Structure formats: C-alpha cells, structure tokens
Length: 513
Ligand SMILES: *[C@@H]1O[C@H](CO)[C@@H](O)[C@H](O)[C@H]1NC(C)=O
Ligand SMILES: *[C@@H]1O[C@H](CO)[C@@H](O)[C@H](O)[C@H]1NC(C)=O
Ligand SMILES: *[C@@H]1O[C@H](CO)[C@@H](O)[C@H](O)[C@H]1NC(C)=O
Image (cartoon, helix red, strand yellow):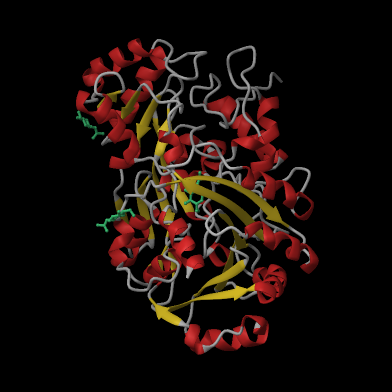
C-alpha cells in the first residue's frame, strides 16, 4: 500500500553524516594546503589529503562518501577546501596543527573537513562487558560487532545503522533501550580526544569538565573524539518486536493514550510511534518473550489490540534491523554493515519535547497535517521509565537535560526528491509552528542530534570568537541554561580561541574573576 511504500522510502534515507569533524576556517587556504602538503614530516601522507581545486572529481566522490543528506552536495552549499581522511591518530594531530598554524580566520566559508570514516575499529572485551569503538564506526557496525562477540550483550543507541558513532554519541544518543539503560552517553566510560592544541587526551588527562562536555554537548566543539570506551548491556537471547498500524479514529485514540502510558510501561518495553499519512505505526521492542509481553499489552494497552500474531521473536541484533526497515524481516543482519546511504531524497528535521500529554481534541487537529503521502512524518520516542536511566540520571550529570518530567521526544522529518529544488518545503516549519502550544516552552527544548539552524546561529563577537549571548538563543534549547553555561565555560578552558567552530558550536565563555 502507498503508505508503507512512503515509509520504507524514508527509512532508506535514515541516517546523517556524523562521523565527520570540521576544523575551523583556514585563513589563507593555500597556506593551509601547503602545510598539509608538507605535513609528511608531521606524519600525514599526502594521499590522505584531497583538495577541492587539485582533483575535483576525486574530491566530490570523497566528500559524497560521508554525506548522509544530499542537501550538503546541492549547488550553492559551502564546500570545504579539502577533505583529510586520516587512518590513525597522528594524521588527525597533523591536520589540527596545520589548521592551527594557518587557521585564525574571519572567513568562515573556507574550511577543512576531517573525515573519520577510516577510523572505525570496534574492540569488544566480553569478560569486562566493555568495548572501545572509534568515532568513524557506524551504529550498525558497533551493534554487529558486539552481538557477534556475545549475543547476550548489546549497546544503547539509536536505530539508524548508518549513523556515525562519533556524531551520535556527541549529542547524547537516544534509542529503543534508553528507558532501561539510558542514552549512549550514559554508558560512555572513557574517550580519546585530539584537542585544539593537537594533544591526545584520555578521560584522566581531559579532566572532569572536558569529559562531561563531550558526552552530549554536540560534536565539533571540544576537539576531535577518536574513540570511545562504552559499557555493554545485557540483553536476552530472544526479544520480541511488533509493528501495528492504526488508522483514522483508532490512531487518534491510541496516540492520546500512548503519551502517558508509554513512559510508564516496564523499562524492558519500548513502544515508539510514527505518524504519517494520517495513520500511526506503533513499533515496539520488548526485552523478553511474546508470552511475557502479551499479558502486559492486554492489561495496559488493550486499545492497540495486539495479539500473538503480531509478535516476532528474534535476536536483539535482528530487532534493530527489523524496526529500522519497517518490518522487513527477511533483511539479513549483515546489511547493518552497509555504510552506503541512498542519496535520493533531501531531508530536514526539527524536534520537540512533550511534558504534558496533548489532548485528544488537539491530536484530531494535528493528524491532518500528515495527509500527503511521502511529504513528512513525526516519530515519537518515549522517555520515562521506573527504575530506568534516561529519567533518573540528573539533568546536569550530562549535557543532555531532557530527562525528568519528559514524556516523549518528537522528531519532525520532511523529505523531498532531489529532482526538486533543495529549498526546504514550508510544511515542516508550519507544522512545527502549529505544535508550539502543545510542547515544552521557555525555552522550547530541542534535541541537538536533530540539528536545526532555524532555532539560532552563532554570531561572531569583537574578539573573533563566537559570542556566548548569540549561542544562548539556540544553546539553551538544546542543553538548558545551566548546562549551556557549563559547556561555554568548559569551551573557554579547553579552546578559548574558538578553533573548533561552526554555526552551532559552543562559544567560549571566559570569566575574569
Ligand atoms: C532526519 O531524520 C531521518 C530519520 O531519522 C534521517 O534519515 C535524516 O538523515 C535526518 N536528516 C537530517 C538533516 O538530520
Ligand atoms: C600513523 O601513520 C604514520 C604513517 O602514515 C606513521 O608515521 C605514524 O607513526 C602512525 N602513528 C600512529 C600513532 O600509529
Ligand atoms: C547498501 O545500501 C545501498 C543504499 O541503500 C544500496 O544501494 C546497496 O545495494 C546496499 N549494498 C548491499 C551490498 O546490500
């Protein structure tokens, strides 16, 4: 049916370029390139530097290989001067040092891109239930490596297999196990970072604030994180998944009830909702068997009408594939290792958090926004939990503040074919505007991993660094006021010169007392 076709299409583009770090602008780009060319002395082989001017077609293919949203390739989009593709830590250090020598700039249109895609090893320690994963690995590669080492272990992360670990962890990492185990960053134990001075630091050398900031403060502000040590989490050999569609009035009733029910369900049970084409798809992963799940569903959520026929029992690894592919159970788990993303649709995302359930009457007005097949959709991800972690960790323990009192996150996704102009359709701004009375306010919170430049961009202050005041506009929405201030103070300590920066990087705040 048309609806599921539209849906599969979206899932096929599911993911964004996260394994990429940007260096600050290079003043005289030619000096910067000369430095990189001479950087063999620093240990950076010249074949790992691809300059835009020197070999345009190679440059485009290297750039495209890590792009997840074709808007980054559309005409008129800023292109870096070069892409550096390091294969070890020394190469990253050399790139950072060249940028430092030649990179104090007021010309933000000129920059280098460090593509970490080749740094993607996953080393699992089964006995300790930990793993070291490099930033350039994808979430699919991490899940696969962990489950192959021990099917009784897993990691808490988002569903899209082609998301880069580096970007995903840098912003928090919400997913289908966060109610029981927390976000990805709640399970990060150590990390290796190249800082703005080209130094290689682990957790101990970084110090408390720096290690706090990289676990949710957004990518590209606090250095280039090369690897992460993570805690692995126990999962049963058999988990149970279902996909249940509800149409028209049944959809409105079920979503209305779901809002307060889903955050209060047992921590082992996560049900998220996709609203598209005036229908609602309830997608669930339960860390247990169908026999255990059925009585919970019939007593707590009879409106969904779930029966044994809806249950699919499988391994946890298969469940990530199943939910992500919209229920295509025949897809082999090896597809999780496929790093290629289809680039045939432009996308634009926005987000919200809901703390107070939206009334049924309001949902009746919200559903008609999703009447055009394929134009866009929302995904609702439940927070909450009883002994769970996403909501019991304090709002200031990591930069991700959307914890206690949050019922669910809303992700708005617009997508449109690359044969159309790259300009973002009005639909997504309009639906986001319509939702304002129903969602969190003062500030209207947003999830940093669903980057949205509409909520504010940095302005450059007199000293040449981005200004704290301009950053507060968007930063307090992503991190809350207290966390944003701590992030800015930390930036002031570790990168006062604002070397690592972009439109929404953390501005340095240096206090004189
Ligand atoms: C928006 O979200 C979808 C689904 O999670 C993803 O495929 C897409 O890459 C995202 N786009 C952007 C611009 O973040
Ligand atoms: C990285 O590779 C270069 C050769 O390209 C080598 O000289 C250097 O020692 C390597 N560094 C590390 C940390 O392995
Ligand atoms: C990997 O994914 C891409 C994009 O979805 C697809 O075109 C390609 O066929 C896949 N490769 C394999 C080996 O399945």
